Structure formats: structure tokens, C-alpha cells
Amino acid sequence: MKRILTSIMIVMVAGTAIAAGLPTSLKVYATKKQTVTGFGGACCDGAMKPFGEDNACVGKLYGPLSKIGLNILRMEISPNLEDKADQWGDYDWNGSLPSAKTVKNRKGIVFGTPWSPPGDYKTNGTAQGGNSDDQGNVRATLRRDCYEKFFPWLNTYLKWMKNHGVNVDAVSLQNEPDWWVSYSGCLYEPDSLVSLVKNYAWMLDRETYNVKLISGEPLGFTQNYIDPYMKDEECRKQIDIVAGHLYGHLPLKYMKPATALASKYGKEVWMTEHSTTDNTDSLPTWRENLIFAEELNECMLAGCTGYIYWYLRAHWAFAGTGDSKYGTANKKDELLPRAFVMSHFSKNVTGATRLETSKDADAGREKEEVLQNYQYSAYEKGDSIIVMAINTTANARDLKITLPYNVKSGKLWVSTGNESGNLCQKSDLDITESTDNYLYEMPAQSLSTVIFMIDKGSTAIQNVQQGDTDGPKTYYDLQGRKLDEPHGLCIERSANGSSRKVFIDR
Image (cartoon, rainbow, N blue to C red):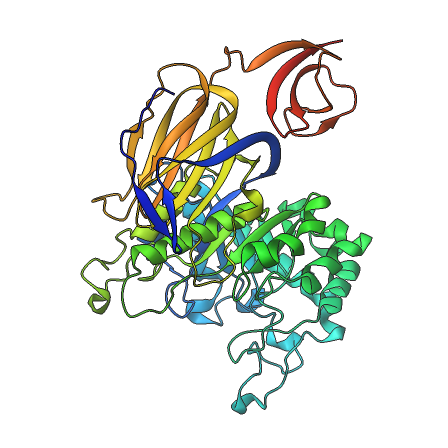
């Protein structure tokens, strides 16, 4: 890196003067964390109504050739029975079918979530959650004598969708089993979900439908709902993905500890519903969109492998609704700035493996409404290293990036809220020779994606003899697994935390 920054300025952040000429440092290690499956949203358009044939929004958001690159779609499994598949009108299984077909045709993932099983299976005899005067404030649950009907009912949904051209990739147990509602809903205690899975999940026809099972999706990631699945061996075998939402639950404070045990057992972790600054009277400000960027970043740092937003089409989501009261930019199905914030992650981080950085421990916000001044995360994907950088201050800031391998070129995506058109400027990095560090000036109030191309022919890969070391070192294979007897191409990590790629001869 031969870039020289000539201006030095004093930046006031949280009452402290910081010289911009003294860069923030970010060290990226070769240690690998989770691999990211992808990003998406719910097939809902106002009061949870699915899109039906009105599929333009999904068409603009999904697939590698789209501007945004989403690849996961969440659908409601309406409380239908197969012989009454149209009993719910707009909310029946037909409603999500066109969108699901679009996503599958673009090599995406579709999964279904029940807000309620059929009313016939429940203690209140209806799909409603029971939290209303006209329902007698009944805490509606799945009847114990109907536990054995639950997974066969999911099989009817999978069969119906397959017969209509969509192979569903995963199904979950329940939307927000911890939230008592007046709309469609069903309450479960954690031990009830464990009992349901442990004793009856074998009835899910995985062989026919090649489907994965997702845990119940509580209102927030909390250990009392996530850990019990993992502590029961039989239950643990059945759950493929643990999931939850973020309402009132910041990712690094709740998701990270709540999913630690699940990650230990190799389960995926999906955040399956949240929205920031929703139901506001105007389009979100750029500051609010940076809050969304921070949430995405914090979920990655918390070990998340899949992030699914709430609505796809809403003035506070990814595509406009056409309602002029929210501003002239809210044109129906026109992509909104929040979609391009998502694209930094969905276009670049999908399929990537997160790498440990020196900033992992202190990256989170302590309060929902307070922005962290700077946030970072890093990833490896094929021959590239990707660094996400968020600067929420009113001033540009230098960031010195130290990488685990030499790099020879790169690309930059940057959004500041001031761009026209696609809200994401792209350019080449100014790298004139192979290097393992780069000085990047983060623009004020910006989200940046810095993509480095690894120089495979550089001295980043060094030949050393086993025992040719100064001080204690540990070794890992290229998948991040510790090696007791290292040989061949592997990652060497020193006691001071530095890493390099080496070749060890036996």
C-alpha cells in the first residue's frame, strides 16, 4: 500500500479530541469463525399479507444478478389443512407460492414458519393467539394429544408446496412461542418445545423432502429458549438451525451467549425477524440506516449464519410501497437506501467465512439508541479477504488494516447516503505492490466494504521447518481447525496473536 494521506484534522468524538492522523487499527487473523449462509426477508406486504402474483419486489431483490443479492425467503405456513388449502384466502399457502418459485429459480433458500398450527389442534380451537377479550384471554397452546399431529401437518405443507413446484428447504416449529398475541399465534414453554421435538420430530419426512428443522423463533435470543434443545441429546439431533428475533435483544448481549452451545454442536444460527425504525411517519434517515448496518455487523460478530429481515416491501424496508405520505422517494417497488445497505453484506458476505479480528470484543453497542463510533468485521471468501467498516461519526477517519496474508489488488464499495442511483459507489483500491497492510480513509457517516485479493505467489506463504520458531506457536489447517502435528500448508499463530500462512516440511 503506497497511499499517503496529507490532511490531519482533530475530530471530536464523545467529548474527546482524536487526531485523524492517528489511525484506528484493525488486525485481521486467519482464525476462522462461522460460514455465512445468506440474507433475506419475509414474504409479507402489509399486515403480513403475502405478495401473491404481485412479485416485482421479490424479483428486484433476489438472486446473484439482482442489485441486492438476497437469497433467503421466509414464508408463513398458514394454519391450513391440505384438504382446505384455500380456507384462509389471501393468507393460504398459495400466497407465497409465486415468490418462492422466483427465489428457488434463482438458487435461493425458502423456509416456512407457522404462526399457529391448525386451530383444531389448539386449546382455544382457533389459530388466534387468544390474547383478546373476544377470545376470553385464553393462553392458546398446542394440545398435548395433538403433538403427534404436528409434524405430519408440516409434511402436508411440504407435500403441497412440492406438488406446486417448490421444494421447501426448512421449516420451523413456531413464530415467537414466548409472545402472547391477539393475532395468529401459539404459546410454548421451552420444555414443551423440547418434548415436541424429542418425541415427535422423527415424523418429519426429511428423506422425501430433504428438509431441515429450525427451532422455535422466540421474540429475542434468550438462553432459556435456545439451550434446552442442545442439552437434550435426542432433541439436539433433530434441530439443524437455531433461530430467534431481536426485539429488545441486542445481538452481542443476547444472541452470542444464547447460541454458544448451539455453535459448539455445529448448528446454524439464524436471525429470522427484526426491523429497525419501522412504522415511522417518514423514510428512515441515513443515521437510522447506519443503525441497521450496525445490527447486521453485530449479528455476524455474534456468530449468525443467516439474517432475515421483516417485511421486504415497506417504507422502512427494502422496496417502496407507493404511498406518497412517506415522501416522493417511496415509489412502489423502487429500491430504498436500506436495500443497498443490505447489499454490502448480501452481495459480498454470503458464502464467506468470518475471520477473527482484534476488534471483535468491543464492537457492540451498549444501548439500542446509541451508535458505536466505529465497527468492523472481516471475512475470507475464495481468493479474497473482505473487511466491513462502519463510521458513524461526522468526520472521516483513517483505518489501518493489517491482514493475515499479502494482497495485491482490491475493490471498494462505499455508501454515505449521498450517492445517487444505486447508493453504492465502487472503485479499485490503490495497491501498487504486494502488501499485508492497507490504510483506508473511512468517509464520515459511511458503510464501506473493502475487498482484497490474496496474493498467492507472495511471501505471505513461507517455508519453515517444524521447530523453526521463536516462542510458543499454534497451528491450524486452512479451515481453522487446530493441528497437533502440523505439516504441509497451514496457518501459524504466534503468542502475540499474529498469524501467517506457512508450509511445514516433516
